Amino acid sequence: MAKRDYYEVLGVARAASDQEVKAAFRRLAKECHPDTCNGDTTSEKRFKEVNEAYEALKDPQKRAAYDRFGHAAFENGMGGMGGHPHGFGADFSASMSAMFDDLFGEFMGQRRPRQRSARERGADLRYNMEIALAEAYEGKTAQIRVPTSVTCEACTGSGAKTGTAPTTCRTCGGIGKVRAAQGFFTIERTCPSCQGRGEVIETPCPACNGSGRVTRDRTLSVTIPAGVEDGTRIRLASEGEAGLRGGPAGDLYIFLSIKPHEFFQRDGADLFCRVPIAMTTAALGGQIEVPTIDGGKSKVKIPEGTEGGKQFRIKSKGMPVLRSKQQGDLYIQVEVETPKSLTRKQRELLKEFENASNESTSPASTGFFARVKEFFEGQ
View 1 (tube, one colour):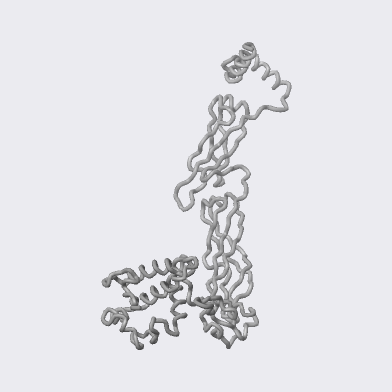
View 2 (view 1 turned 120 degrees about the vertical axis):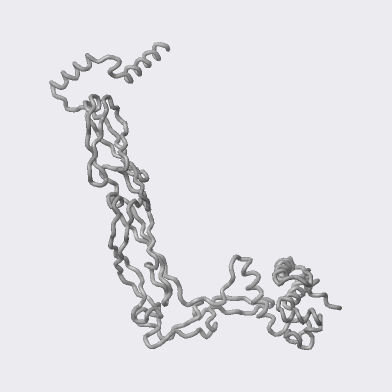
């Protein structure tokens, strides 16, 4: 039976570009792959036909020979196809494995690595730090001690004893993976001898037992910028755990928490402070002095007849905004304090004040109880 034209097999024109040929092959390979055809006996034959056509047309030299001589270009050993009448020589399994790497590796979102590096990145570390609100306001530089893995000085991170060096794994030849043929397919697994590193250490370093790192306490300087909030995370690049056998170090993450303040509560860049004032100050008016987060004081004028819960804003006396020149505000919320432990004279004065009071003195309470009276009388 005469062989079909390779361009016809792939469904492309003779003038098709390399990309168009490759795209057609990928589409057909997925459609007629034996594993996706639910037992269709013709799928394997069709798959081989598609692969044979692509093997001939993907190579510029083979494609030029095919365009000139047709299928005769690959007979009697021509074209480097190994003399096999269908283009499947002794290296078929290897070419199929390479094809799967190229084709299905991208379908899964990434290519499979041909070789895995022996140097593994170290783990990231976390350090919890608690600071005062005033420190968050001003910013600070702190010294911390972190127990971590550092590069072994004896072997400089190689894991091998001084005077020796890691050797290429004989099982995988340094690739980090081994392949085994199972019928039509080639299965690739992590090398059991080197655990995928591609290297083995025959004489481990006695100081680190071949890991290339040892545990030490490190002292680090951490700069905390002004305006940080509770839960802020600071990253120190390459200050984490040292990598295995000379691999790159991980990162160190500082997680900040802020201690509760005696006077201030924080909401973003704004601060809030509850200040009790005397009943007389609320009624007659006056002036109070309140603390600020920078350690200073500010004066607040209390108008006559101020009620409890009233807020007064002091501009730009709050927290700085992180990495900005802006600053929040300070809000003073007054709480009117009811007099306690009155003397006889104080009681007489308050009684005299009560007798002299009228509806305009306490309009809120007078109005409320008037509505209550109307409610019950209307029942």
